[in-house]
Image (cartoon, rainbow, N blue to C red; front, top):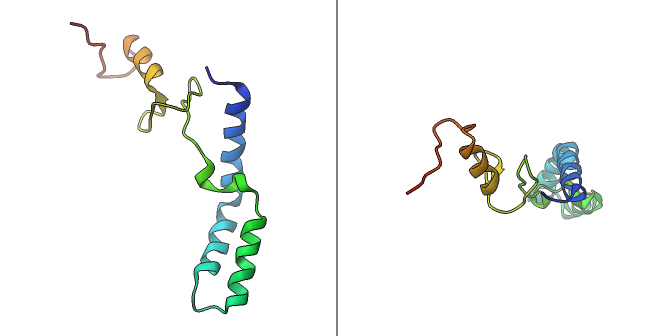
Amino acid sequence: MAKKAMIEREKKRERLVAKYAAKRAELKEIANDETLPMEERFKARLKLAKLPRNSSATRLHNRCQLTGRPHAYYRKLKVSRIALRELGSNGQIPGMVKSSW
């Protein structure tokens, strides 16, 4: 089980990304538009730098929804390999059975 603080920090980042997504996209569009004058593009870059760092989508990290584990994460199921094995063994994932030989 991951530390509660790490899980909460990741949730906070998700909220910030959602809050600032439109503003970041607008500023990036202005900054990358080569038809605009250089000063205007530079001002957009400065405004983009003033936004919180955690509002950037690249700072998000996938975590297991059950345990909070950051490694061995299955995107399709949103759980870690350990939680997946446990759920499969309990028969809670349709079509998945624990193999034994």
